[in-house]
Length: 115
Image (tube, rainbow, N blue to C red):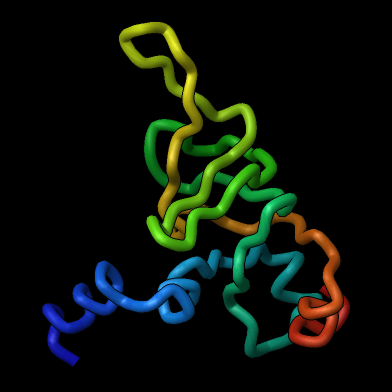
């Protein structure tokens, strides 16, 4: 597809199609548990992720919120102060994160065998 159409799908798409952009790379340990084909998984609240790019690179934190509409992931304890001194969570792109630990759910047990 053309780049313009791909970008349009991300910004103007329906919620159920935007959800597919929230996949995060798996760590080596989770890849081994998941099997040969799984490279990424949908990020959920309560998962532990590691920041791979940006100013907060190397930090590990739990996911506090996932915004499907914006396509962003918010982490606990990773904040920024604004001019008034109010701390707010930093929004991360899912492509800049790596999944270290997964919260167990019945859906994930079916998709990722034993992860």
